[in-house]
Image 1 (spheres, rainbow, N blue to C red):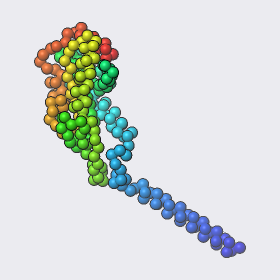
Image 2: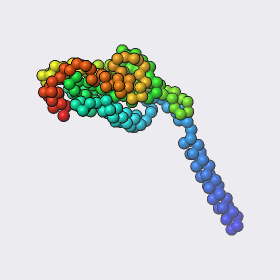
Image 3: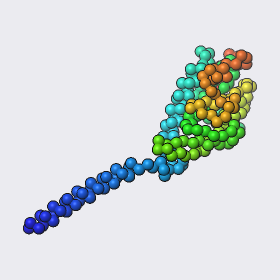
Length: 211
């Protein structure tokens, strides 16, 4: 009888020790630097979307700080012309013209030229590991948007010059292209040139299309 009790006690101790060992192994696995083993395609897309949303909101706030009281700002505008669709982050309409502001919240270091279809985006983790991801060149993207929006407005009886600019929220542009916005004063001057080209009735007509 005593042997059975001792055997049972030993079994309980063994199971307990085994469970403790498994627990610490589990903690060790969680602490492993997984960044050494991930590739750009494995990065959490939810985190990317969250960063994009934050960048979008910060971009709107940045743009609003450069507006005058008679400027109109429209965000998340979609236009379609000749079966070609363009999703516009922000469109400013004022007496000086129509301006598209494409906002990007690209982090890290960017490498590329204004005519490259894609740029390289280099990020470094907290553990010192770097990874590279390809991102679309926003300069080419906004030029496409300008073309489609200008054609869309012309189709609706409004022939006006449309200008497009890129706002990189981390101000990490790899190029000094004139399309890139560098600070709030630069943005203010771009959307408030010295010449006027839109009459109040034309502005109202454009605003109705975007409302």
